Image (cartoon, rainbow, N blue to C red; front, side, top):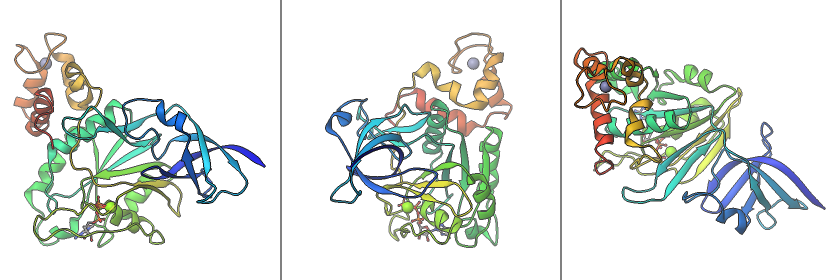
Length: 314
Ligand SMILES: Nc1nc2c(ncn2[C@@H]2O[C@H](COP(=O)(O)OP(=O)(O)OP(=O)(O)O)[C@@H](O)[C@H]2O)c(=O)[nH]1
Ligand SMILES: [Mg+2]
Ligand SMILES: [Zn+2]
């Protein structure tokens, strides 16, 4: 008997998908029909985890008899990145998200602020609320380095909420769980920052693969290789994702970039000229705010880097 229904994509690895009729957790395999695949944009993946789709299914779903995705509903929002530095292609990381949880650690792997800022700008562009998680706080039990404080200064003054966590000791995990409750949350960030470890800490019944930090490069090893949603026992859904190497902006004109730095947008109302690039114009309120420390030099530098083109990111 042919059944038609609507469901959410909860796993994606290559051309394999799993669907579930959220909020039910009843996942089953699915494939894309060729026609659906061809439509759409330059994205290398036409369907992403979090997408709401229509499907049809003849009999019981199984790997041998997968449901067929027939239609993709318009997305409420999404996070997208340029696949590689010079590529025109882009990759949708997640769709229909209530929250982007951006996991960073200061060392092992070493934090790259420009990379974080590109991710934050993308969340602003596509209307995904972002939360920054500063993980691996257990490494500073004896002495909290100055970098932690300056991290709070930079991103707190930009208006972002920061939760300090340790997947190892459980510090901050309750607070993170509360932030994720009853929401669909994409965990994103560099390889090795602890995304999978934190998801496991949020709900120990879950078992996402956790990797190691390489001894040689002190970087993550790209352990998670697919996009996968998990249901949290206390309510809510989290999406584990592969660590990002580079992050290229998509669809943001140079003249718009400053609109997506919340603190710069606010200050720019005082600029003498509109539009103002906040670089050389006299009477620029953004530059003034940088000079007097209201806007951090680090964020402003990231902005200049993005203006200067995507040559530099990696
Ligand atoms: N000390 C400490 N180590 C942690 C913490 N969280 C994760 N790690 C370690 O960091 C390494 C990488 O953790 P993962 O959870 O695999 O990182 P990931 O962000 O999922 O990495 P990818 O899947 O490669 O993107 C593992 O060795 C973890 O044990 C933490 O809070 N403190
Ligand atoms: Mg992982
Ligand atoms: Zn200005």
